[in-house]
Length: 90
Picture 1 (cartoon, helix red, strand yellow):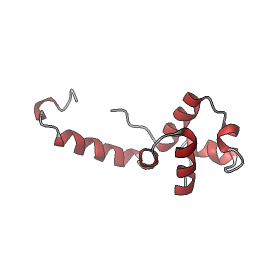
Picture 2 (cartoon, rainbow, N blue to C red):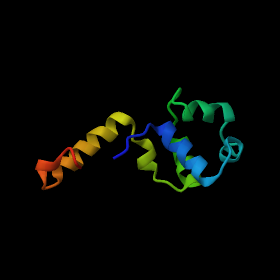
Picture 3 (tube, rainbow, N blue to C red):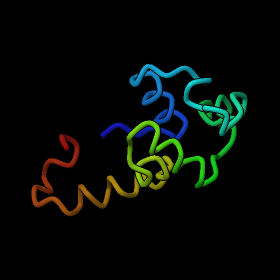
Picture 4 (cartoon, rainbow, N blue to C red):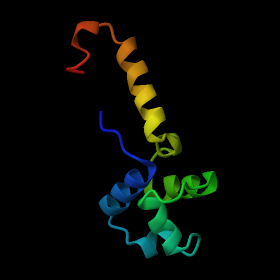
């Protein structure tokens, strides 16, 4: 289970899809703002996450989860599994 910040998720997805910052922003978001989002200097608004999730074809909910909430979700997922002896392995 890899835990990434929202900015890291966006940057990885953008690079994977082969978009430049300019192509991703598409006059909807300034390039400097997108750079700040990717470098986790600012938290994106929901409308930006919705735009990015559509453009990058990834889940809005996945983008919205910050590091703390991802850790909480992962712990909950592990606790729900029946094999509680192998937490570290999971």
